Length: 234
Image 1: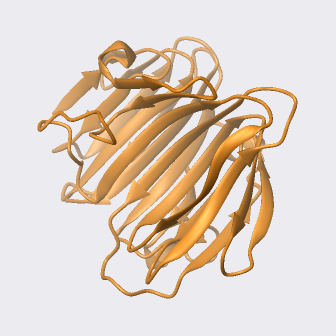
Image 2: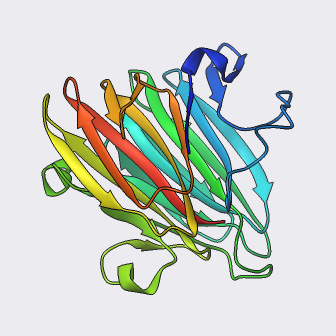
């Protein structure tokens, strides 16, 4: 089963400094049919204006992955972490027993991010934060695990406390990739840029693609594309 969720159908809130689109119910956007997808709870497509951002606020018991699409995001938190994550790279925050953090765009251009929240395997993990650069060239034509709770990814991906992974790939126009999906898992795919076919279903830039009961994914790019996908236990 593959369901295309057009970008125009997403929840939307424009706060001036933040222009947010919600793939799943979040804040004032509520759709009972879009509450979660396996362990995936939130996928926000955010545009943050220059010299603005999210002031310090708390979280608990959530795995939060930020994929930077353009610009950069600067992170600070109450357990002493601080860092700047640039386009194409990811940061991971395990909220665990509780953490407060801020996320600011300190650049002179808009910053675009995917903010992805996943439900942890249990409550009460120790709070943590990490970031890592992932050069796009290393993921051309294939998915690379950027953050993962699966043991087979522990040497290459940022760790998260959930049975799931966040993957990234780039495709050139006309290029295809094939990905073997655990039949007991679900996947949610968003082309950050480009238009693609997923097992024959067309998805445009920033559309959501909800996938279940598929063992093999064949993805073909109609133009140069940058892809982010979450694979998650059901």
